[in-house]
Length: 191
Image 1 (cartoon, rainbow, N blue to C red):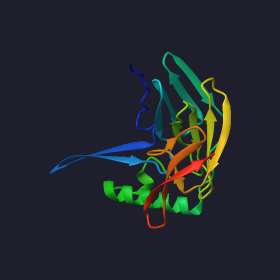
Image 2: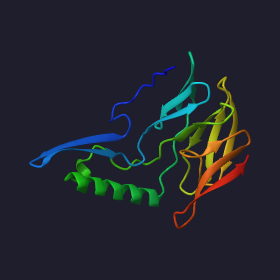
Image 3: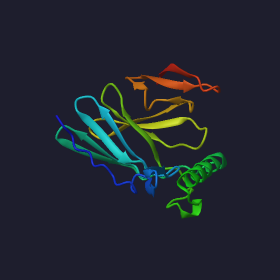
Image 4: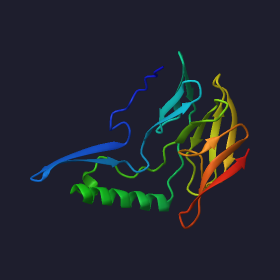
């Protein structure tokens, strides 16, 4: 079966398109707002899909013919000096790449990170909403049951990623740990 998911316009998802024409042809550049909103989707068991913009804690959870909205009133953490410096470097690089200035870009560095970092489902079908945390702090996720009740808030080490290639079971997870040299290892955690 199919589930329709609303896809946001580029400006809503923290993207900015730059189209350029030159004698050699046309080019389209996609610039992304550092620490800006992103549209994220998670697919779960039994034709379950959840999606949101990371800009606010307002998740749409579709389970067959049922739709559930999960909301919380929280804001993202303040950016660290290191995050601001990294974001500024990205803006400078993007501006140079498209032949403009940082001031001419439609976005700058925000004061805060978006409140949501990632979405994923565990093996039992619970929705995990990973929150953005202050730079270097342990990761946190709200775990929601199928009725929309928050069952738990789970914490784990900052250097272990569950989104992307991780797997979350009932009471345990496989995540990816990146060491200081950039080498990735699969690790098992119990909650």
